Length: 336
Image 1 (tube, rainbow, N blue to C red):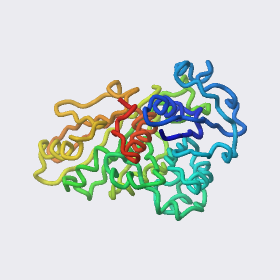
Image 2 (image 1 turned 90 degrees about the vertical axis):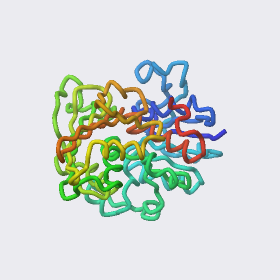
Image 3 (image 1 turned 60 degrees about the vertical axis):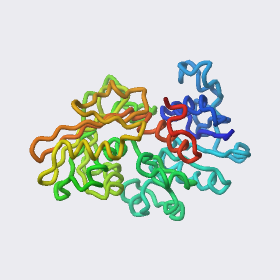
Image 4 (image 1 turned 120 degrees about the horizontal axis):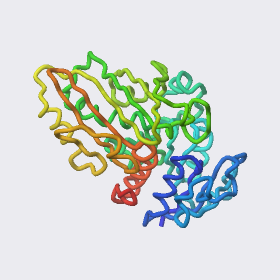
């Protein structure tokens, strides 16, 4: 039985992780932590003002600390559901103690220190771990994940954006001179639990943000090997991401070619569902660990639709999927 802890367990993704790990047959969830000054310290995760739906399911107390020395004994797995700056600082501690770390932040997703200076606003001090980190896009980095000690779980927007595009790029179906245009809408849970005027549910309508400046754009472009135009939006719904991707195919490419490419790479991938005659909606994936993909082709103009739950396939479920791959379990264990 593998022993695991979650750091940053009171956030939305952290709570989803706790739910999945608690029912995993090969994992013992031994501790949940929050920052030392968190008002949630000492509470049960299933407390009424936190996640009462977990009452009788995950009744562990949240430990408020910044010193993990007493918690590290005999721990095999650490999940970091923390801010990127926190993950950056503490991941090396767990790694030095031999733990396998699954980091849900952006702290180790791109092997470029200048990337963090430009887009995250801090100097990355762990180049050696940047070079060793494996990007946890589970369907595409399966073999590398099996060998990794540090898995950088992709962001929710990058997951929804890359999964439809990668098969088409691999099969050379896209006109690469025209950058794919990704318009993606996330529910307000993507902004986290910290309240602000901009993410209060009654204040959110539908608005774009981070135009040409959002840090997920270079993450997407780096791992696709293709420049993109990425525009995120915040919508007035709780969970999920709906991505609409406009691109241009090469001369002579047909709908059968597009469908064939998607099926070639995803037929045996249990958490990707490809639509053949229609396109998916958010209601198909909310509270489920899938990414659903559909498309329409007219002439050389292709519209791809990708939907996922931002907290699940876009965060916690993909992290658990990566853990299953890393330790040789069926990749959907505890997810389905």
